[in-house]
Image 1 (spheres, rainbow, N blue to C red):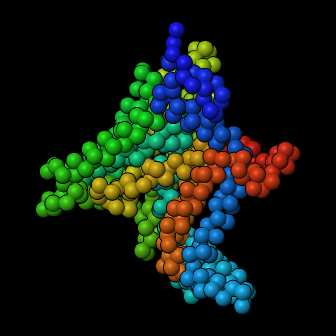
Image 2 (image 1 turned 90 degrees about the vertical axis):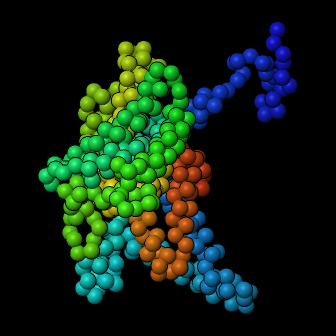
Image 3 (image 1 turned 180 degrees about the horizontal axis):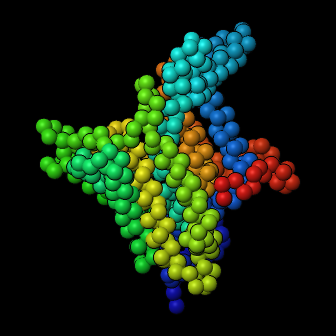
Length: 427
């Protein structure tokens, strides 16, 4: 007879020292991530958009309470209350105006006839969005297969080694050299992600835990590689690679001081390819079937483990393309910080995009716009760029809690159903 534990205060039920009452970390992680995954995939577009609106509203409050002019006016609120309200409006309006103008179009430069400077903001948004879109696909594809890929950061870091090595280590004709570098980055990324799929398929190891561990391994391995003579730039002691050959870099689309390069078109093409794969091929059908119900898919004769491996291979390939936007595009060099936080931002992009390719495209453009516009906002109004990070965090919070969004906007029953816009968008 097993020993009895005291009753659980939250449930009133007693437990025992049997394995049935234990919840290993991977099992707990699995239940939590599966609940979040299904919640996101079943969320309609209206709730997603309202989550963004709610995040912007809270961001406005934070901008107001941190504004020096608002703080000053609040000091004599009871004497002249309208001054406080005016200061709040001016601080929020100026900050968000600078944010969106810095992300889309500089109206002042356009009025003066400086076309290149006027369109600089949108070019920056597209440049920043390209790796976010591809990394978002790296999270979204396994999402559709029932997996939560937290490892885009490590997959990008490992892929940077392969893509960079080909980029500066080989001499090939223009065009062919770029393709070879991109393919090598995709292969390295797919290999690193494939380890996760293999462990999941063969041992049942939960992908959240294995991807987090592999992130550390890849990032530290990249740091070690950058200090090796065969990878480190000659004459330098800091961890940095040689500059990539010009034949291995993305050509600029417009020039004139604009950083936007051919990589944005590669990102758009990848979105279309992934959408086609998921919706028009047997592989995509299997991925989505396993994601909907792995037990039923296994009963129907599908090799669920193989599907998981394939989904992770696709994810790693997209992560490889994502880091190539930096290695072969903006930076043209491999450093320890080449990945930045893109791998983690990709989780936000995939959740906001509801795991669909075209949803990821829209979410990547939104987050990229916030990042690009945040710099202009800070420069022109003094509003900390950290507000952008807060907005991202709030968006994730509200997407993970759609009931909260419905409660705030009082969406109930038929009202919520009537706001289901473009039901099949991006699916």
